[in-house]
Length: 322
Image (cartoon, rainbow, N blue to C red; front, side, top):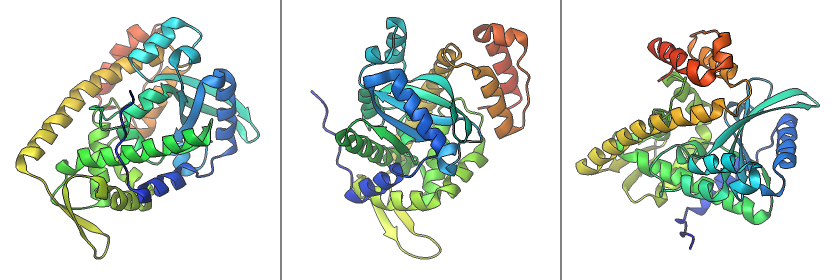
């Protein structure tokens, strides 16, 4: 029996629905078409997020996509790959297509609709999914209007879960920017990432209007004493959180950090076996965000699972990722 999803405010649903309906580039449409051809009727929805979605431009970097499927067995030809995808979702792949505007490259993840619902909800301890989908996300394709509405509700629910988990970790007096910077820093800290603190500041600044509206809409659904203080230069809030609750929240985020780093390493191992050009992409992204450069030696290309750990340790010592 499916667990009933927590109610989210209608204003938040409308905000997320509008964000999901944002126009996407021609290249993203071509990528979505190719993914529908590749996975057929298993595809229930396709989501886009990340820097290319924020900029509305697919010419710089990789487009980040999520392919939501009905069942892993229906999406994968081999049983082994379906089982691995089920044990540790999502499975990550690369895709390159030619579009009318030029060559477009994507990094896409395969996730079942059930795991999407569960992962983006308060039922999941780890922030990997609800921390990601609380951010602006576009809906490129949905098989039916009903699935589109369900995806919208899950995305809105991720915002509520995100804020509820982050509020005990912010000062008693805060604004939306402070709340989201803190939350994204905590969520990113549970993964192996190349981005530094300045990246989080940039993300919140780029979509500041959305985060301001999302905060105002979602706080009504959070069971904490939050008081709205209207005044210049931006809307502020006061939250009352018991000391024991703040302590438990800090402990929970530390647990997410320990667990999340381990899961990130396992997902990286999976991606090395499925992501064509994944080594070069990882090194490019690290250099882009941190300025730390490294070459992909022939040994690394031939045996990424074996040689990758030595390179990862060297880059970690150079503070290329955290």
